[in-house]
Image (cartoon, rainbow, N blue to C red; front, side, top):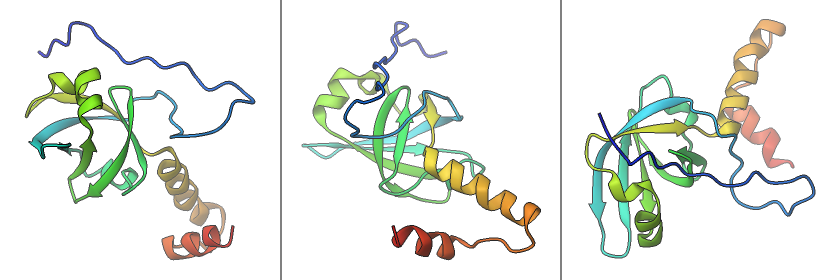
Length: 143
């Protein structure tokens, strides 16, 4: 059992009318990941996290992800893992300072990926014609 001295990350929610910036996260936990490797690059750390194949489709390169309440940007995604690049300040000031290979982490996947997946998966049920990812990309590029 891991013990992080009962630490948690808490940030105030954005208020209606506030300037919008950063990631949109909800504070939900979608799944549990496992730290696969932490590589010190000198001026940053690459953190590789295993994730179930069921949840990996909701991890998007350059999309947002939340690890134990820390909102971050995903760099790369593979079939069963993803890579984050963490700056030294984040490594020092968050729970990342406690992580090592094998640490379990709570993950909130990309909200937009979940919504788009849900819409597409139900499109065919409500309509005989469903959208492909290329069609969704084409539609979003027009806006």
